[in-house]
Length: 111
Length: 115
Image (cartoon, rainbow over all chains, first blue to last red):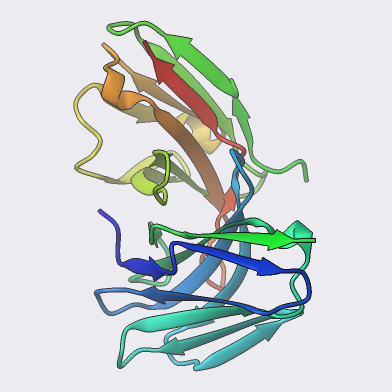
């Protein structure tokens, strides 16, 4: 079963704008990861944040984690048309093992 | 490093037939995972291996599903007596257990359509 929910389910923005996606989960975790999936393709790992971290950056990506609220957010700054994809958060209860995914946010960036 | 390879990319079968998918992980990766993804949903875990040992199986993995990873290299996922509800994308991922945590690398998936 899905770990939690992501919102919004769909997000449509113009190129150059920022995109924020949120993820909530239900159980205590070891780490939370964000993945991107282009239509009909496999998933690509974007960033991992551990439960003892509050914020992490990677290029145009910024991830926050609030373990007290069991929630995370992914911010993509200065979005590009190539960022159009589905974005999933996934949690790991232990250091290694199965990922439990949210339902995803479909991001569309218009040129 | 050629990435995770899955074959076939697409499979169309009739209800009741058996199908088998193959996954070749990134070399040296000791963990291999299978997930299933239906339209509009996130992937759901099915099973995973560390080397040749199958360490965990989801309740989603009914008796009709079996997975193997002989010699700890490639893996196969077989579905017997397919049902229309088995139609989905089957994703394979691999990872290397190390100090940085479990980052899983996914293949492009096998899309199964059961008619």
